[in-house]
Image 1 (cartoon, each protein chain N blue to C red):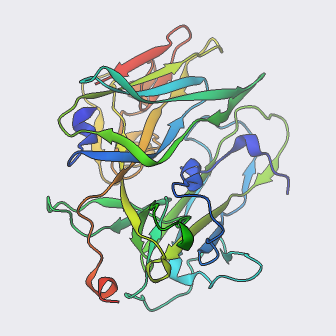
Image 2: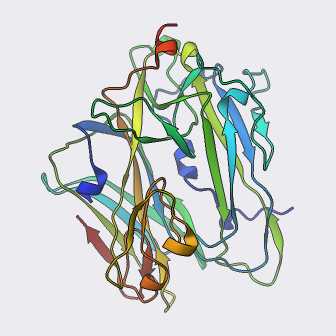
Length: 250
Length: 110
C-alpha cells in the first residue's frame, strides 16, 4: 500500500493538534485510541467532498491503560471497540474531535448541544498547577464517530490504496492533576445561496445526494449541487470562479 | 454569520481549526463591533499541484475574548487559477470556554 499524503483528507484532522496547556512531560497518564479506516482505492480524481468515505464508531472506554511503549490502542476498521458495559464513572477531558453524536450536560439555557468527540487532553503538569489547560469534556462511554474521506486533485493514470490512521488522545477525569478548562465547539460559518430560491439549512441528517456535499459538522447548511453549479464563490459550499477572490458573510 | 454562530454568552476562544478547500488563500474572523480581526488564517499551496500543504490554526491558553452582543463576519479569499469553477468552502471551528459546565453526578462525586 502506498501512501499519498497530499490526497488524504482526514476530516477535522487539524483539531487533533490542539495543545493549549503548558508543555510538560506529565502526559504519561493520557490514553489514546487509534482508528484505522478502511482501505480506499483511488483510481481517478475526486474533487472536494466527493471521494470515497466511511464512518467508524469508537468507544474511548476501549482504550488501553497507558503503556510503557506509549502505543495507543487500535480500533480495527469497520468495527466498534468491544467494550460492552458503559462505565458511567469514567469520563475524560478531551481536546478535540472527530464528529460525534454525544450530547453534553445541558447548559443554563437548557438547550441540548451536539458536542464533539475526543482527543488529546492534558498537558498541564502536576508541577505547573498555576496554569490551566483546556479541553473538550466528554463521557468515556460515549460512542463517537470518526468519519474519513479521501480526495484526489492531482494523480492520474494509476491506482493506489490509501487509508487513514486517526489517533484520539484523552485523559480521564480522575487522572487530572490540575484543573481543566472545559471547552465547547461552535462553527463560525455562513451560507451563500448561489442559485435558486431556497437552499438547505439546518438539516440534521443531510445526505450528499439530496442536499449536496458538505464538510460541516453536525447540522449542515448546503445548497443543492445543481443550485451551485454556476456559482460565484461561497464561504461554505459553492464554487470559486477564476478572478473572484473574496467574499464576506455577516 | 453572527446569528448562526449563536454565542450563548461572553467567553474566550482557545482553539480554532480552519477548514478550507484548494485555492483558498486565507480566512479571517472579524469583530465588526470593534472593527478588529479576531483571527486570520493563511494557507500554503502545493506549488505546481492542486491542494493545500498548510492551513494556520490558533491555540492559546489565555484565549481571545468574544462577546455575545458583538457582530462578526467571515472573510474568505480564494484565488482560482485553473480557469474553471472549483468547489470552495470556509469554516472556522471555534473551541470556546464553557462557563456552566457541570460534571455528571457520578463523576463529580468521585
